[in-house]
View 1 (cartoon, rainbow, N blue to C red):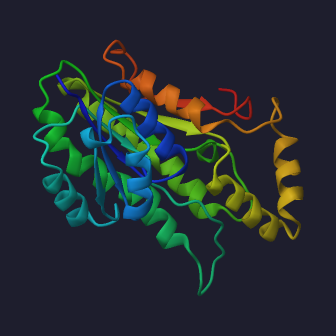
View 2: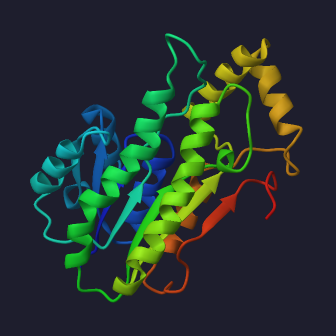
Length: 252
């Protein structure tokens, strides 16, 4: 039986790698994102691209998610990877990006889970899966990143509430909390951190890595493999957890 999985933010970075790993494991993936060009680049890179669908939507708009799911033609979902997010610094004032960052990361995930749940509930497999992409910054403050840290921490509270609510239906939900991962978003974050700190991108990178016991970023493939493990039908006991993958930056 084909297992359909929705992945948001599927056009680049960690999302693209997650799609590739899930597709290689035999899942049929519905790729959601705001840019059809990058979504199609991801889909066409897969071994059997015709098994998968690319659909444009903005996760901050519930009606767009609903329309995309209808257009996908699926009757049920095995799982959801709510990966869409926006990483940026913010500063209080007229040009503050607080609202945009909260809307994309926190409200967007909330919308996506609720719009996918009716499809997940229709699946006949014993256990269904939802994965929320949080961040090490849910636990670790960074100057100038108040909105992003707040949004990613908020995802953990939301995830735990969903875990208790959905457990009687055997729908498991967990959050993955990566630290910096070698993607374009990470390099943009270093650029913005440098601006917030009054220094360069390279200096921001070195300052950050000096706090990491392993002294490195993770690779997107590592996040994808962890996602695939949590999506496995063999895993039926992990729910309500914030799973850290951060090279030792946070140890709990």
